Image 1: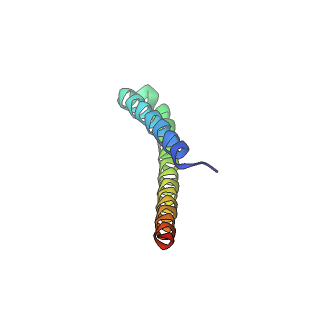
Image 2 (image 1 turned 90 degrees about the horizontal axis):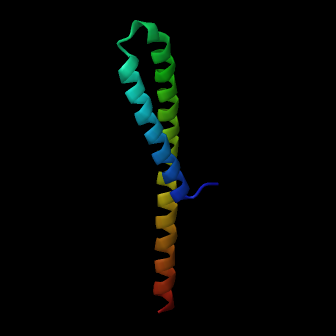
Image 3 (image 1 turned 120 degrees about the vertical axis):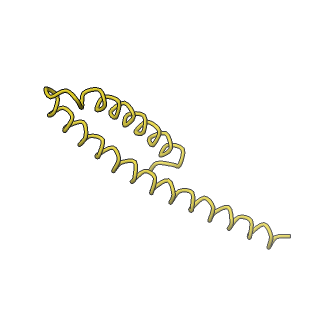
Amino acid sequence: MLNGLQILDLLRETENKMLHLHKAIDRVSNEPDFRESVSVLTEVVRDYQMQLDKMKHALRNVEITNQHQQHGNQEHQNTQH
């Protein structure tokens, strides 16, 4: 299982790849010879977007878990004083 920092690194890496793909699509989108390439690149971008959405969801869950643990630790410390 990945921790929050690992998920964040994957998220940044995937966003960077998507940026490069968007630039490539922009360059070739007006060229009739590259219509098929544009379709393939667009599909790859959709796949990356789905991965990003999954990673963002997983990252939100990690943050909630960490906040819950911190809250629990504070309550435990408060009961000891």
